[in-house]
Image (cartoon, rainbow, N blue to C red):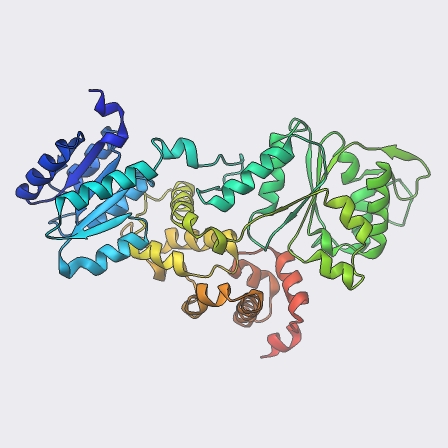
Amino acid sequence: MKNILNPQKTILIVDDDPNVLEVLNARLASQGFLVFQASGGTEALNIIKKEPIGLMISDIKMPGMGGIDLFSNVRSLKPFLPVIFLTAYGTIPDAVSAVKAGAVDYLTKPFDGQDLVKKIHKILKGSSIDIRKNNILPSPTDQDFYWGTSASMKTLFDLVKRVSASHVNVLVLGDSGVGKERIARLIHELGPRKDNPFIVVDCGSTPTGLLESELFGHIKGAFTHAIRDKKGLIEAADQGTLFLDEVGNISQDMQVRLLRFLEDRKIRKIGSITEIPVDCRVISATNSDLLDDIESENFRQDLYYRLRVVTIRVPTLNERQEDIPYLARHFVDRYCNTHGIPRVTLPPKTIEWLHNYPWPGNVRELKNALEAGVVLCHGGVLKPSNLQLDDKIKGRSRSSIKKGALSLEESEHNTIIRALVQTGGVQKQAAELLGISRRSIHYKIKKYGIEISKISKS
């Protein structure tokens, strides 16, 4: 019974050939492993649901539920369970695809028993006894965000934990769709101001003429339509956190006013002569290069240093590729619940396809694609064709992105052009198609100098 409580000594073997099961059982039991046996996929799943299995060894080709289908179901139940496949020569391509989708290895039949045991010891030694406890990072209360297990996200989370305990201003950097607002919210939730307001200011889409009133408020009669006093968002964030999203888009005049507030921690409403003290933490975010903006004199250097006491960069989805299978499972389960759809399976070939796609829209694009896939798939199996993503973009994918920022920008530029052409130049519809916000597409159109008038006429 002692072994049952130790997943690192518990192995499930799955094969429709009783002779193979007998040989494997004898070999593994002699090494001190507790062995569970299953003659097919359904039986194996029932065991996995009941027992603390530490590793599974499965044949690829079995009647009924084959090894690949079993692997898909196991990934849904226990995403981090190590799986080794036993494969005949003719099914090696399936085993290779499964490894790319998350299986740890495969062996061709006939295999050497000692090699298998060595491989098992190496796998279990390199894995944590409790992977979920040690490697999966907690999520903010917002279920749109999922940490995954990658080293880059662990580094990010460690930094977020350290920063959140203080009151310093933070600048969050990252491409569109990586989850900058989620990180800002988590810093607030983990910090000393968590019980006070978290106020979001959308600097990217708020017109310049309105932003001053939104931030600082106004008094009655300050201008034509000021029919009553209005509290600004900075004042509303008192004792809490002010989140300035797309801060790189604010005007020069607003930069001056914001800098003065950060220096004095006082505001004056439009039309008022009285200053109001405000104590709030300021977290800013942008997907633009503020240093380039400073060099071109579009952003104040002194404001930049006030905003970025600490800088946090959120990795792109391309920089956390190993998280894709778990992100996919997380969002598919979520959207199944949202739309009242029975649980959808993600086959290894779909996971491999997702892994190879470049994701110019990052996690936001992945989410939207998976929601479409959940709604459009048939028979409870999500296929790449259900995702409504462009194979041409996939063809350029990872290799071109790794060569440098220029190829990524080129890919992003072309993606936006295609979306605008498809929607006749309607930016709102193009943003929805790409799975990004309206302010993001406005920013990208401006960044790449895209002329909407020419697109809408084409």
